[in-house]
Image (tube, rainbow, N blue to C red; front, side, top):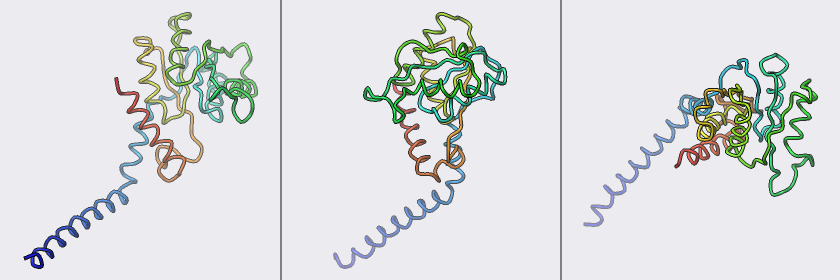
Length: 211
């Protein structure tokens, strides 16, 4: 009996393996269809509009302060708000300078005057901390319109976190995307750093959505 029953069982197993292989092949071939929308989903930025100030979030000193400087130089903002970024593990970065100081150097080098740079009070170790720092600043200057500059893939989670802190004041906030080097929403899965960045961002977004 066993000798008779074994072949159909093995055949059924091979059929499942073949079906799984076909599904994997379809997913791989269709990745250019579903992976770019996954990348674009994370980006809720808008074209730059005229605001009172632009806030540079930490974590992208190679791009974000440059975008902020461009907004000031083109007359779309009058001031730049810098969060005070807490060095990881109590140490400065590889340059030996706190990140917000590096951002300030970039802004000054790009033509933003020292009087146009505002250092927000309170050390920040996360986007949520930065949201609270912005909230405190808005308490002192109600009605201020602010463009928040962060990486394109980071804008959706940033909006979620800021909304929890700012509430109705989110009407005063817009989001401007800074580019990433080597990959974007259309090609992120083709670059190792892009895969890590976008995958990690989705995990962080899911975590931020939890109560």
